Image 1 (cartoon, rainbow, N blue to C red):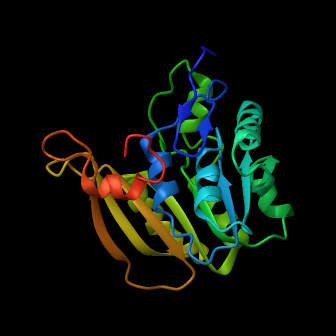
Image 2 (image 1 turned 135 degrees about the horizontal axis):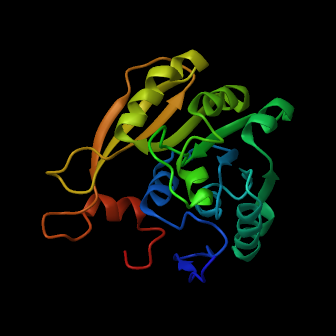
Length: 239
């Protein structure tokens, strides 16, 4: 894999030379957006480089445990490296296995489960097989993800997830089958005149009418919007 420079945040940096999916807007968005209030434990499903897990460690109380899971050998190596070099190395527990098998074996219940999961459910695969496995729902169908969350989430816990718009709507459609219900939805646009590109969705155990709002990343002058800066200002160096 070609050499890739680390990505620097205000309080930590992320090595990403071993993983196909680099630090990007989706992961940072869900890591900054997730509600961590009163949460004492968290699980990052498909941790990759570990960036979301480390963001949670920065945001959550010092007593909170952050678990991270990935099935990929290189991701586990990379995440462990980044955890060890973060300001909070003792906060992390890493699991090298599929979420499907972990959910069967684990007796732990988490207050927060978070994921930037695979999202393509069809279409042509390229020759870049490793990247395809991350971006397509090959190893983690959304039904399997929801089944695992149903098993692992505490009664008052929440699931925070980011998905492309249509996949997010489908995810919401099937979530009730797994006793999970949307309670907060943020529609993400790159610019105000653009269509909705992503959904940030928070699920809980109790059916309710979800609170909905919109997040526009860029203003009309092509600068980052005030709302995006406010959400991510604890992380990005230039905010």
